Length: 205
Image 1 (cartoon, rainbow, N blue to C red):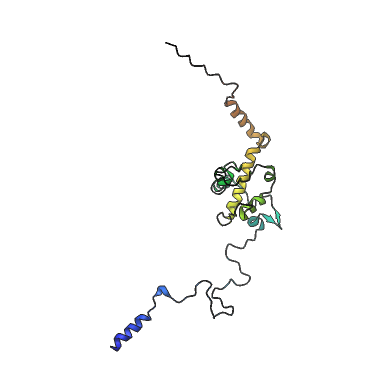
Image 2: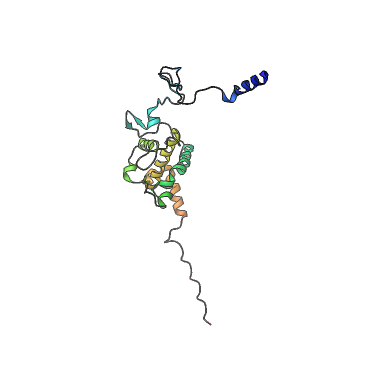
């Protein structure tokens, strides 16, 4: 009888490995002077990947002033990546042309800003990065969804959109202008197209 009782007591005290003693997040503890079980990082240490030493790259500013230069070179592949990210995160409000006529606007939501207005065409690149990061007005910040580098690539694509809607022949390299002339020559204009002959009227019986 005694052995059976001892076995029952032992079974009640059994503790499986999946239920090991531990502190939960933010649980109190008498072990430390501040009463907290969760410990902060030692003074002067920085978590891996959070040094943020390049101010321009991570904030779009230097000494509090917006930058107008990209913190790294933008290649063609980068611009394509920026277009892809723009299409995912920005077109619902700003539209594919960046004119502010995205799908949610067409469904009745607040009009989004057009990148082609003079004020935004004259803004510095760092301004767009800051807005994407922290939000502006009704627009939320996208720092949680879009990595730092991708935010800059979106800015690069916004610049490309702005140029696409306000470019002139002078913006085309001199050695490429001939291609534009050839393309224009191959495209018939409305005045040079031959009129289509009218179909003969049906005979009355």
